Image (tube, rainbow, N blue to C red; front, side):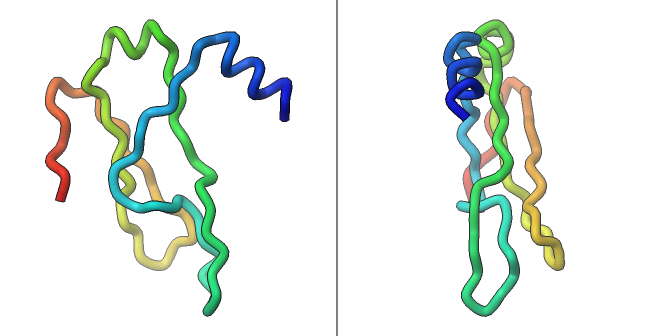
Length: 80
């Protein structure tokens, strides 16, 4: 795990903040386990080209994963 974290640091990768769901996975039990398994990392070069990029978690009923929608548009989507 340390090698992975070192690689992210060496490359200068940054995580794009997610809008929407707090977690991206659940085991769908009565007392659920919830976790953030899915993330989007971008390089400094990509970040410079798409400074207004956003990441939105989309609600999906019946699935244990929350799909993520990455937008690199010039306009950030409105926060509900």
